[in-house]
Image 1 (cartoon, helix red, strand yellow):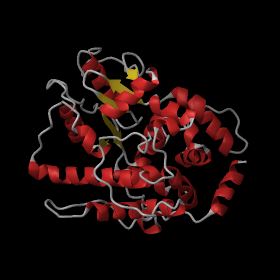
Image 2 (cartoon, rainbow, N blue to C red):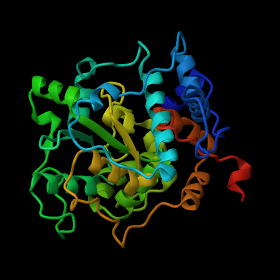
Image 3 (tube, rainbow, N blue to C red):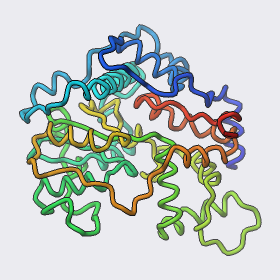
Length: 363
């Protein structure tokens, strides 16, 4: 059955090219680059143009104003100060992301309201947005993008935790308020008036991080998902523990799964946080975690003693070389089936598609 589903998708139309003509968004300080040109370049580079052509989203497209500008005026917290020289790239990247999101999401066939989502989509979204009424902000948490540390910060800000350095096992539910806990009118008020942010990560790097953590270290995930994956994609298996799932098997599993029913650790950020219906004021990145977290904490008026936690000494980051090694071990055709599921994450958050050409994988 799973093989038939993949074959049907292959017959439906051409697959995306895995080689991006834009390997990164680089700027020189003081460059007078037009945001609309950068937006178009990013969309083309990430493969988002194919999606937009397919959905007829290029008709009457105009560059919109920076998103969130009107709502930012309502925020009463102090504006963060930056060093002008070091801040240029930061501002340009935010401008690119803001305009890309509004350009794609501003089309009429994209969802424009939380209440226009399906019940499952709305439930997923509201269960991933955390609320802080004292500092008037909403944070959409994305697993494998430092969300545990952000939850720790939220508990400190609410007074439930004395310090981000307190050595306690993170409880991901207690002492946290989710948008799903509130009534519709309370939800709408906060969506309209609170500062809203999320943090994103290169999509394939996030998947690899989830794979190594959940199938290499967490027995519950090995039993719940690993056993199923091994039985589904291996022939003549006997007793299965689920602790030896290969990355290629994991990718096959993702290809066959419906994105709206995925586990949150590998569900696309688009499905988790719905950036087309929630107008986020700030999109931070895992690649610049400390810098962007500091910006957010200053913007919401957090007490100066509240800081974002440093990474633990035991943490194993996913290096560029490690990611390339794993991706090059996956059959090219399978990767071409996987990428469309995460194409909006690549496009909206300006990440280039991975280069897994023969040349890249043999060096």
